[in-house]
Amino acid sequence: MLTRIDDIRLGYGLRKDALDRLIATARTSLALDRLRTLLAGRATLVGIAIRQPTRWAIVRRLIAIGAPDAATVYAAEQQLDRSSEAVKDAFVAHAATPDRAVKAAYFTRYFDDATLNEAWASESLGAFNTIEQAPLTLPFLRPALDRLEWIRQNRRIFFLPAWIDAFIGGQRDAAALDVVDRFLEAHPALPIDVRRKVLTARDELALTVRIRTARF
Image (cartoon, rainbow, N blue to C red; front, top):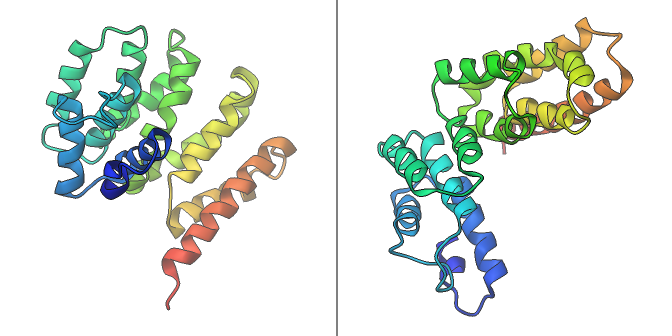
């Protein structure tokens, strides 16, 4: 990814795509150092300082992997960002915190906080269910599934598929697959549109489990 980001033969779009992929997967010291230099303004993308959405994506990644400087970077970005999206972006990034208490607080707010903007909640679902945090978010999977019919009745049409994709798609092992299967077995009268969405996500999870457990 670093090679593509620095490849002057490529246009901005391809190099930005490489950066987005790097942010989504960065874990090594080399990759994280590049992200930090971009955030600090010591590096640019095609001679252009990274924009605010990319800055928050980097902050979110540092939070998600539990980087030692994550809290400091998060606080600094809150001070620096004066855009209209600042509070929302901070809310989304914080959802990636690898801490059970933080996850529990977010999960509660999704249902009990009438003041929480639905778009904010929807956008935070991916951060909440960061794939590397699957063991941490697994205990929330069944409660998330148990609220599907409530979501169908009380949220906008696009929230339900986003919820299903995030909570099931954020898992990757047989224990999660068993949770989904037990839920489906326990709810034979689940509305057909909801069942189909769950089954689609379930099949993708099953494929992930098969690939991860395959012996070559």
